[in-house]
Length: 208
Ligand code: GDP
Ligand code: ADP
Ligand code: 5GP
Image 1 (tube, rainbow, N blue to C red):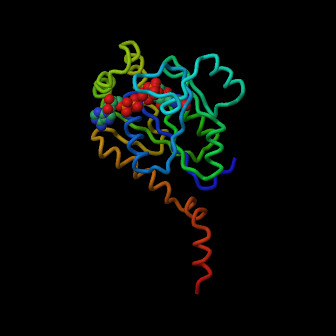
Image 2 (cartoon, protein in one colour):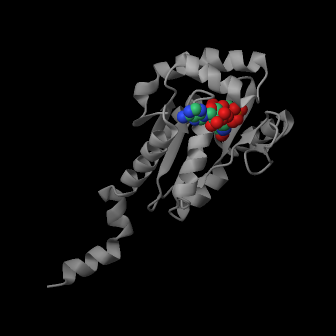
Image 3 (cartoon, rainbow, N blue to C red):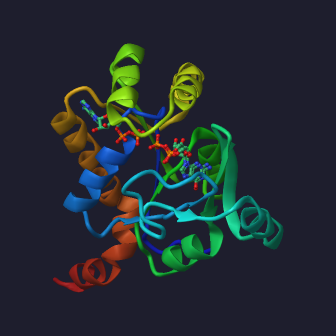
C-alpha cells in the first residue's frame, strides 16, 4: 500500500487516562488529522452516537466482518470486541491523509506489523490512584467494568517503552500541547517534507 505523505498516529492509554479528551482537543487544534472510527460490540454510553464515537455493531455482525477481512486489526478489550476498518484506512492513506487511531495496545502491535512507520503515542496517567478517580468521576462504567479496567492498567504501563512518545496527562493543558507538538514535529520530518514539497524544492534547485 502506498503512503504518499500521511502519518499514522496510534494513541494508546489505560482506560480513564484521558485519551478521548486529549484526542478531541488535538483534533480541534489540528482539524486536518482524521480520526478512525472503530467498530465496537460494546453498548453505547450515554451521549455516544453511532458513527461518531464508534460504529456500534452486534457480535454476529462483528464476526462476519472478521471473516470478510474488513479489519486492519481487531482485539477483545475488557470483554468487548473493537476493530479498525481496513478499507477506510487504505482509502485515507492513498490520498496522503494524516490519520489517528485511538486503539488498545494489542491493536497497536498489530497495526505496527503492517505499518512499521506508524507513530505510537502512550498517554500515561500521573498515578493509578488518579486513574481510578477519573474512571469513577466519568461515571460511565459499572463497578465491575471499572475494576476490570484498573486491573489492566498496570500491565499496559509495563509496555510503555515500546512507544515512540509518552505524554503524561497530569495538567490537561500541558498534555494537550505535548500531543499537538508530537503531531506537528512528525509532519515536519524531512522524509515527509521532501515528498510534500517536491515541486517547491525542485524550483529552488533550478534557481540560480
Ligand atoms: P475508553 O477509551 O476508556 O473511553 O474506552 P472505550 O470503550 O472507548 O475503548 C475500550 C478499549 O478499546 C480501549 O483500550 C481502546 O483503545 C480500544 N479500542 C478502541 N477502538 C479500537 C479499535 O479499533 N481496535 C482496537 N484493537 N482497540 C480499540
Ligand atoms: P479515556 O478515553 O482514556 O478513557 P477520558 O478522556 O474519558 O479517558 O477521561 C477520563 C476522565 O478523566 C474524564 O471524566 C475526563 O474529563 C477526565 N480527565 C481527563 N484528563 C484529565 C486531567 N488532566 N485532569 C483531570 N481529569 C481529567
Ligand atoms: P471504551 O470502551 O472505554 O470506549 O474503550 C476501551 C478501550 O478500547 C480503549 O482503550 C480504546 O482505545 C480501545 N479501542 C477502541 N477502539 C478500538 C479499536 O478499534 N481497536 C482496538 N484494538 N482497541 C480499541
